[in-house]
Amino acid sequence: MTTAPGKESPVSAQTPVLSSLYQQSVADYWNAEKNPVNLRLGEVDGLYHHHYGIGEVDWSVLDAPEASREKRVVNELHRLESVQAETLIAHLGPLRPEHRVMDAGSGRGGSSLLANLRYGCQVDGVSISESQVNFANQQAKERGVDDQVRFHFRNMLDTRFQTGTFQAIWNNESTMYVELSLLFAEHARLLNRGGRYVCITGCYNDAYGLPSRAISQINAHYICDIHSRSTYFKEMAANRLIPISVVDLTAATVPYWELRARTHLATGIEASFLDAYKSGSFQYLLIAADRV
View 1 (cartoon, helix red, strand yellow):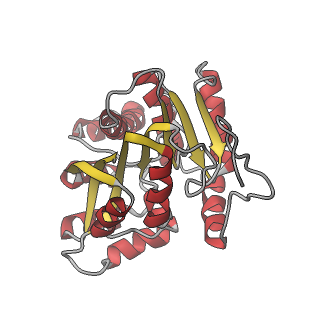
View 2 (cartoon, rainbow, N blue to C red):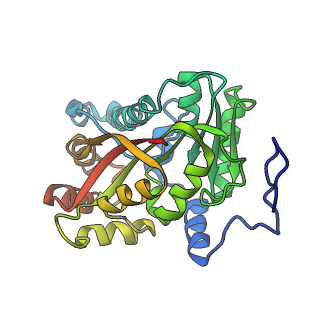
View 3 (cartoon, rainbow, N blue to C red):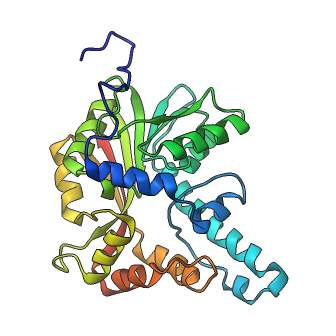
């Protein structure tokens, strides 16, 4: 399929969004997902992030009077995940309102809306969950930015956007659902030369060996496949994405998980994350790379 200058290939029945049974299973999971740890936190300020948090915890929320404890816990967890999103967005480079950026695996849209709020830029979010795309577009409409922030039911491995369209692209905890060779090839196609790619992700530590039992439990819980640390750098290099900053956020995310494990919003996977992080088998990294 060819595309006329300035146009983008439409996604249609002839170009299906979901290209495998696995992708269908992931889409089904997120279409049905209504976990309070995602929804309750987003209700704090209308930014639904769907990712984890970093930073020092205000432990006093657990000792608050019963009447206010639940609200304070929710607010604190949301504050930590907002710090994570702000940290990622701060690495996207010097964005201007005329720039166009893409949120790959955009979930319910929190990071996309935050990027627009900070820089005033045009944002396209991409997700294989139709329910999340609809939810996120409604959030953009309610905020009055639906002319600047748009969410699309598309596959981040084959977005159908025009080559060289974007100044920045990011994945926030969504790379473990795809093959990195295919993902980074698409990102390299979409980015302008000199454009910025940023991801925050959990990856298994090659120095530890094969994925630990705790990592296997995380994979099973989220229907994902956590990649090794070395795979990220190998596939970035193969696709002209050259890391300029690598930040180990492992120690910074452990307090978030320790707090969450002690709250009414615990989902049962917290022990696996804490075991994986503390054993050294799992790392939480921010990687920023330039397209050369």
